[in-house]
Image (cartoon, rainbow, N blue to C red; front, top):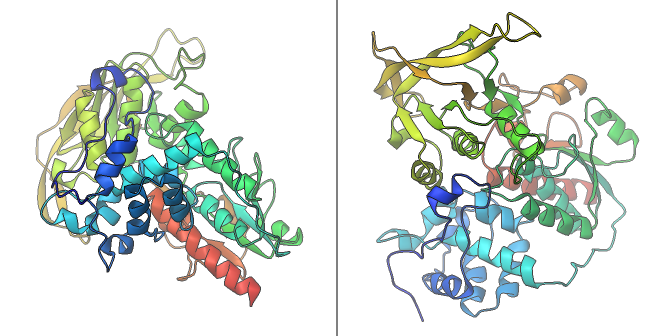
Length: 469
């Protein structure tokens, strides 16, 4: 029976006053009954506009139809025909600007909670299904994947399903890439990523960790090892800075470093032995999802006060609305229409290691106002004269974007990159090097998990076509 309620079912969450002090997952997930009720809001449109908004083209009405019937495992099998990481996507994919933005129910109300339903289905499968996935018969061809982030894992999974002998090379000691070291535990638990990776291993994907392509092995050496194609999904791990005075002070981090330290040092555990920080005031510069992650992580690491410093208004804030609302509920203060011009520090006379060591004491900002739209259509922020003010902080986190690591391009001859250092590819993900493909943040710069997955899927199709012809 159709559910014509214009409002979607709310996602239950931890209370803000409690979750601000722990790393447990914020969103608690739908119950079976709530999932069925939400699924009944889907009109099963014949032209399926929601699918056109999905970068990996999940057959959304079909899997939602199975939820209506209470056949959750069938719903999972439909999703995994298109996506290798359903439990991840259900948590971190920006559905509100993709599949859900195309939903007909959103015209006169709220769209169907597609992402919440995907998460429910994946979690149900991971909890109740014990059947091992069937490993496809080998087709005798070998492909190497560089990086175990969302694009690499997707490319690996899609090729493994076609019988390819796939090996993923990961620089760090735990597979998952940005899913493990870049996204905090309260948004994407490490156990969820490990489960998705384990499923891929059962399909035959091999993962080699602690191998830095460009140092331990080069792309050329991978071909010498018998691989017929290489997919580069190494992400964008080179942080951007503003170039303002004081960025070299102790207590200034890139968001990439800050989140990586928190994740790899396991600061999310109860009473960690290697916490990054306790107490103090933190300013996070930026307004994207990474800025929200860094600010909310700082709060959970014991910060007394956390500020988001962003040069535009709330309407232009690029982060997911849900993440912004969660940050506000947790007590993070938004300093909008403000732009840093200097980070202030002092010499610590008690530091015996280096008497010239300098530590952060504040961040000086100017007020901004919005002028005419820039080339992307966003109103350009303009500094207000004589509007400087200082926020007293002990830590500053720069969350203003990242660029691809230059290591692979510098060690691979004939690999074209653009002025931003991003690898240049055609519509199939093929680079300027024969049989070398790339996708995800290494090509686009910092973007979303689901767009990286879409690029991995496109490259897998192209690799299969090129090898099988």
